[in-house]
Structures are given as C-alpha cells and as structure tokens.
Length: 199
Image (cartoon, rainbow, N blue to C red; front, side, top):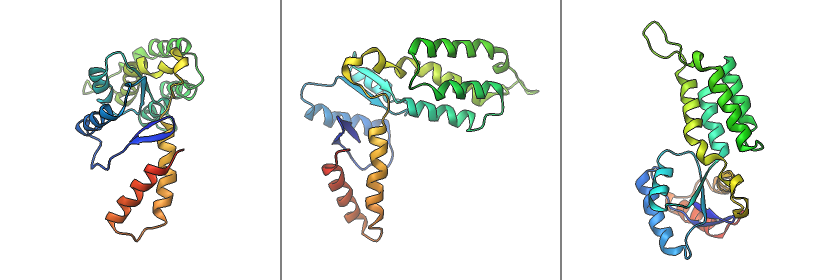
C-alpha cells in the first residue's frame, strides 16, 4: 500500500511483498502520479531502497525510524544481556528526538568502545556475537536514510510509516467483525475500506 498526505493512493492484494510486486506497483503509480514524487518514506524491507534509487535518482528517501528500531530490537532482544546490546538499545530509544550528528557521534563511540568485543571468536573461530554485529551493520548501512526528513524540513516528510501501520489495525478490526464472510466478499470489503478511509 502507498499513501500520500494520509490518503491511500494505491494498494493491491499480493501473496508476498516481493521486489517484482513493488516494481509493478511503482509502474502504476508512475502513470497516475502527475508531477512526480518529492520523497518516499519506506519501511525496512531489503531491496526497496535499491529499486527507488535506480528508478528515481535524486528523489529523497526516508527510512522509517520505528522499523530500524525494530530491526535492532530483533537482534538485541528486549532485554539485552551484554553491555554492548544495552548501549545500542539505549541509543535507538532516542532516535526520533536525536540530532543526526549527535546520534552518529554516539554510534561511532559505541563502535570504537565495543570494537574488540564484537571481534571476539569462539573455539571454532566463528564470531561470538553475530547478532550484535548484524545490528551494528544494519544501522551503519541504513544511517544515510534515517534522518532525511531532518535535513529537508520544508518537505514535511514523515520519519516513520506509522500512517500506514496505524491504519492497518483500524481496518483489521473492521474486517474481524465479519469473520464468516467469503474470501471474495472479504476482498471487496477491504478494497472498499481502503478506497474510502483517510486516517
């Protein structure tokens, strides 16, 4: 689903959110979006940034900060057992209110502080803290897209995809009331809700 200014502009029922499905959706949007795009705010799905940069060079991309927090949480858990994990979790807790330069500096300090810890290997010469290494790598590779909205305030670019994510719960509740309806009627109902709703 794609939204602009709180309104659903395109949606499609798909089996999986593949890159081909996203490319096809963008083909449709290109035909109906007169004047082009100012920016995209996207979730953390791999490959989407690559598609957008290839198709729309120069168009700004904001990666959802909440999704980045969720990615880090998956690697560190809600209750990290190491000081490295706790420090990274604390850093992410403040991402939405942090100054970009301050956030990057604090992250760089963590990289230096836990450099040796993250290089530790076990008796099989495998990295002992693979999940934490993945968390650091994810944040480092996505950093370029995490504060786009702060550098371009005039665009009023959202820093999360909460407009979409929050709406899903609302629509799901409406659909749940009619649990017994057929699959076809359910699809019709969802399409009607998406075409009418503005949240």
